[in-house]
Length: 123
Image (cartoon, rainbow, N blue to C red; front, side):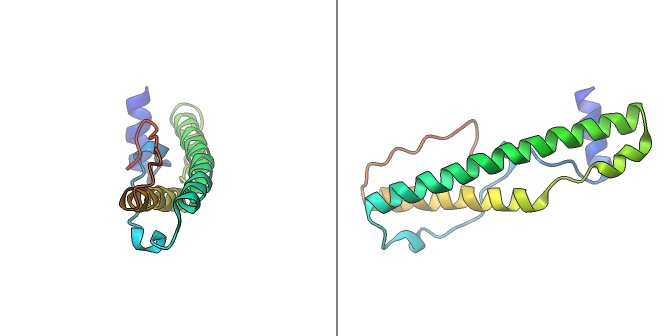
């Protein structure tokens, strides 16, 4: 059933992507050159918190889209119009992932020793 739902999402024009499928947007680490190690650590905490919130919202939207798609196929075809994803959340999440990459690169360049822990997949 899961494979059919994914195929139907694709055919209907797009369920939301899973948060771990969203790739990082490029963000130049140059914007963080003037930061101290402490400022980089604080910035990383803030960006990480925002990315976590966006990941939760994105995954919830994906679940809602999958439910609507399944309902459209099994019960009531007009439910297919409820499927739409959330491109704004996905774009912002990609930006946050890019910022984390840039902060990490700046931290490495400054030899800050900040540990960056990745979840299941962060591009």
